[in-house]
Each structure stands twice: as C-alpha cells, then as structure tokens.
Image (cartoon, rainbow, N blue to C red; front, top):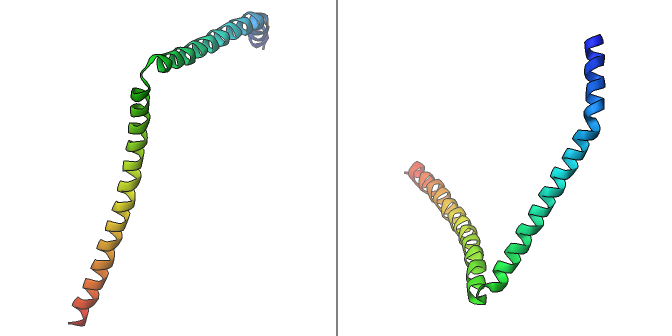
Length: 94
C-alpha cells in the first residue's frame, strides 16, 4: 500500500511537467499540419491549371471507372444467374 501511495505521489508530482510536454508536442503537431497545408496550397498555386485539372480529373476518372465497373459487373452477374435459372428450368422440362 505504501508503494502504491508513493507511485501515486510521484505521478501527481510529475503531472504538470507531462502536461506541459504534451501541450508543446500538440502545438508542434498543429504547426506542422498548418505548414503542410500551406505548402500544398502554394504548390497548387504555382502549378499549371491544366495539370491541376488533370490530377482532379484522373482522380474522378478512377472513381467513376470503379463505379461503372461495379454496375456492369452487377448486371453481368445477374444475367448469368437468370440465364442459369432459365437454363435449369428448360433442362428439367426435357
């Protein structure tokens, strides 16, 4: 019990230092994030508008390609299932 009390006292004594360390680390992370966002904005400002359009359009192109592929795949799968059911019914009739 004495050991536990001692550990609790040490922890509470060190708490203000840890709090300051955590706050400074958090502030450093925030400044790094701000710098990254600002550098990304400057990078996009310096780039040719056509290149920015190409990057954005390829991103949307990839997404639309996946969506279109999913829709086509769904309908092809349904066609195969329906064809199999119809073929099975015809095979049973014979």
